[in-house]
Length: 246
Length: 124
Image 1 (cartoon, chains in turn red, cyan):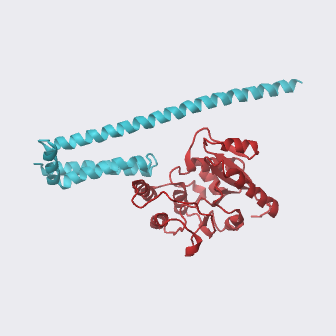
Image 2: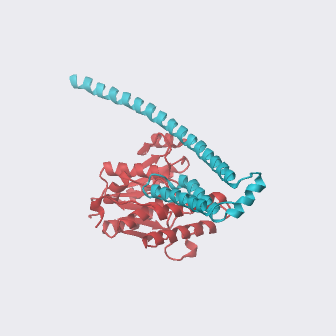
Image 3: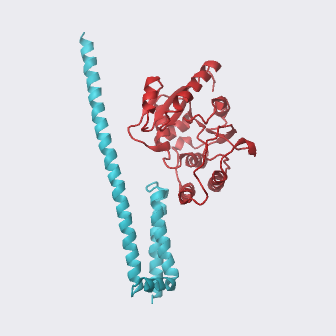
């Protein structure tokens, strides 16, 4: 793939992000100006109840406003459908809250340009750098458990299973625009790709960690969530269209 | 208290429920979240079949003379809960459908307005 001629779309799912969305959008525009890149942006307003919609219209930020909240899976799939209709070569999922660092975008799309991967995940912890992340202990255990079950199901170890900073190529854009997991999309979509013999790779990135004060290991909601994720990973089944299996 | 044939029968029913639910999940016809109550019910049934003595003690404690009445009672309760839950889900879906109907109708009018406007422009 030639880099200059690539159509790249950055998909930003946003739910009640009135505080961050303008700043996040501006960092991408600034990046485009500074590096002479041409990344397109589409914000998916997932039925926000705050002034997100106002901010998007008043600042001319390209966006799609969902008439009802769908959740992260539905919002991101809307972005993929948009990417598919408009023939983008690469689609990148990017957080609206400013946690993701735009300067890593080249690192993330490079394996796709080089045809080394179908999906690239921006991972917070591939190498065991303890100073690279400061999630809570519970959260890290949760991610390790999910990682274990993904390895059990697919044979491949994914280090950052819940990272929303990921890029996919055109084939996968087409596939996901038809079927995308609405529940636990990040781990399940990785499982789908791996079970369909697609290449998934991880690159090390840095993110600004959010405060995560609420969860505790005795919280029933978390155990319920973990049971659901683990069962979903074990039982999920999705076969891509035949021409994708190489 | 409970015959061995009945215990095997209950186990078979539990197995059928369990396998049906797993198949539905794999075929993406039931999300994992909704399946949990069914999986737990089939595990509960298996528990009764494998340890009937524990359960008949519980039945006497609660006031049932026959253990099977407690099982039926618990199952009716579980089914009622599931039905109530389904009612809520259906109501939510009705709300979403109403929203879709309204938004789509308004959008249709907008499209009609634009195509009429384009027609007018053509004749100029």
